[in-house]
Image (cartoon, rainbow over all chains, first blue to last red; front, side, top):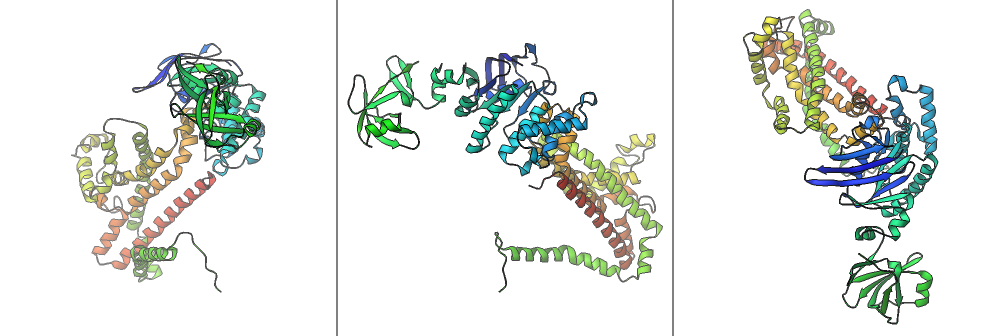
Length: 325
Length: 277
């Protein structure tokens, strides 16, 4: 099911959370809403779910206006940041909840419910936890149960609000990959909210970068990373150095700068103040001689070993690519 | 050598000692005295005193009216707590403070004002009387007084639990297709159930022991609107100390048994709902 968002705006008192948002989510895609906290991404997700009503604009599912459809009838699966599992119910009952609350006419039989729930628990690889209660599970397990519960009602759209936000780094990485594989299996149109650019770049088909209640850029991970449309996107996605140029503010990624001992045409002199060499990349921190600003540079380990820079040495920088806005 | 068990928090022995001494002085010793005093009567005499028809009638009224009052408070206390937590409106703070008033008011004052209002010529009584509803000087009046003094308990025990209850769980239920009623009774009620039971048992216990507010509105007619605490006072005024304590013992045992049952119910429900972790 495709989602179309037309001219959506929403305010809370004086604060305008969303301003005239237009967005198209094609059927079966996994889309990330990415932005800093307070940019309106969660509000947008909640409006798509029907948990929040927009002040203006429309939400269309497959071209059908659903703006004023109640969340109960919208057939969306919503996964909350803090899981929102029902703590007085077993894992099994949590997943079965959406089936049990159906009106008698459409409610599956007890045997069907049992089968469906166990299938879903197998899908999230937690069948063995069916009789436990949520407080007895780890954060990663709870989030997977929350996902199984959302999928039980066969939603047409899956919405995830910072699904991995409350988890530690290692679990987060595993779950990210797992979500990607799951989506490739199910192909249900999914939108997830995150403030973690790495997460968005790794998981999503399409990234929607948001800031101050507006969409800054929409594109594939590669497109938004390699060709940021605005200075904000440049700074938000990955490390970047800003240079003042006569034409305006120029941006360059740390790996797009050449470093040498000899001055070259248009190169900038600076002192190497810090070498951070853990992992495959070596990060250099260089203090510019002219305006005392710091510049981050990344070199491959091999290259660094050949050049063998010493801390405190004077070096010359030359950006190989500079984007000016 | 004796193995000494280490406690992570210091002062366990000292604080437990204090607690025991304190509880003994305030609760256990006076209660034991009640039992001792009533033992002055022989078993058959004791049984005769506590089972006279007039005394039996007071048990029925006291425990019956207390139960009804506590049930009324269970329903309307939950409603009040719900309104105070869920909605923002003008005068909410005042309403919130009003709830505590039955705690603070001398019970005799409550009794006198309730009687004045519900008496056949009172503000409310004059409207109820023509419809055949008599409140003052009847068992119904006892229920009204006990409802009044028990009001804060359910509200104050449920309120913080409702405040802590995450809106997310409700939103999750809604997104899974549950209607409002299903959300309330499958999601919210189980979460606040232990607090509701606590509030209920507190309101009930308070009502059973209530004296001051009831005697004014009850009319105290033997066999009809006489409560057990009044029976005890009556015996005391006749210098029948053994008889008074005998009735007190019966009251104590029934109250203890009822509170125990409520506690077991609470334990059972919290276990069933897996709030162990």
